[in-house]
Image 1: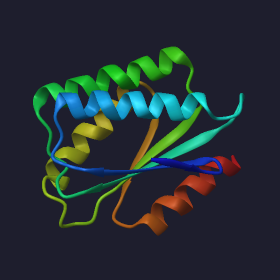
Image 2: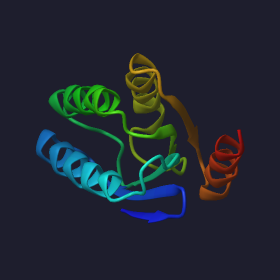
Image 3: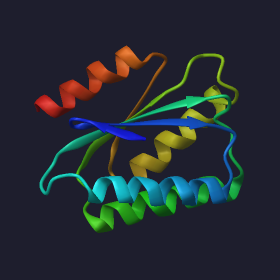
Image 4: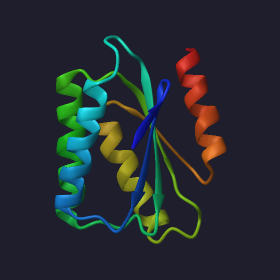
Length: 126
C-alpha cells in the first residue's frame, strides 16, 4: 500500500482470512496516521487472485470499517478494482458494498484502474 497524493492505493491478493484482514487494517491505519492533518483521501484497492474470504474475515472487515469511522479517518470513499476473472468477484462485491454502506462510506467497484482513478478524482474535486 502507498499514498499517491490524495489517493491511497492497495494491492491485495486473495483469498483472505481474519489474520490477513487484521494485518491489512493495521498497516492501513499506520499509513492514514502519517497523512497530513485534515487530508481528504480516497482509497483504491486492487484485488487480484480471489476476492473470496472466510466468514470471520468479512466480519473483521466490517469491524475495522466501523473503527475507522470512530477514529475519524478522512476517507471520502473506497473503490475496489477487480478484473472479471478474479475468483468470487460476482459473489463478494455485493457483500463488500453492504459492509461499506453500513458505515456510511461511498463504495464503487470497477474492472479497471483507470475507471477507479477517474472516480477518485471526481470525489476529490467535490
